[in-house]
Length: 164
Picture 1: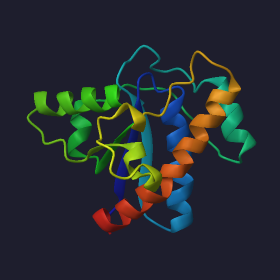
Picture 2: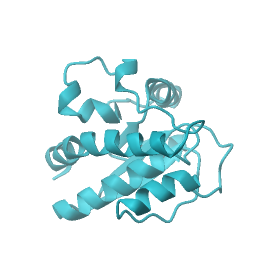
Picture 3: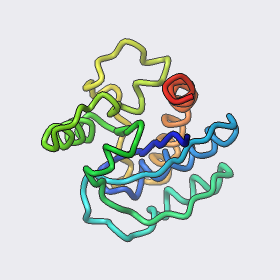
């Protein structure tokens, strides 16, 4: 059975598309049957492509991504095995959304909680945030990529244990 992961940030044009591309390649390289997608908690960018700066950073590192932004739909909680929030605000929003729909939120986690260098931090800690690079330059997107790559092996290990 296919394991399903969705990465979620605010608008689904910067951080979560980067996470989608990085995670997809990591799961493919691990030989795991995992579907990776991304979404935003807000819908203001729905239908837009990923930010050009995100695409430049992904392409420069050999990642491929065909992306259109979309808003997270609470009905997905029933079909997704792991929801990865890119910051504490999105984590709180997703957990509230799950509660409003009478669902447990155990499968909603902060992406960086899987980074071994940050082990032991509370999940709602701002230290686990992947900083939003939207108002910055390409360096911020490069930093986002590095931050996500650091947490990715932990996500792969978790999915291996949780789903296989």
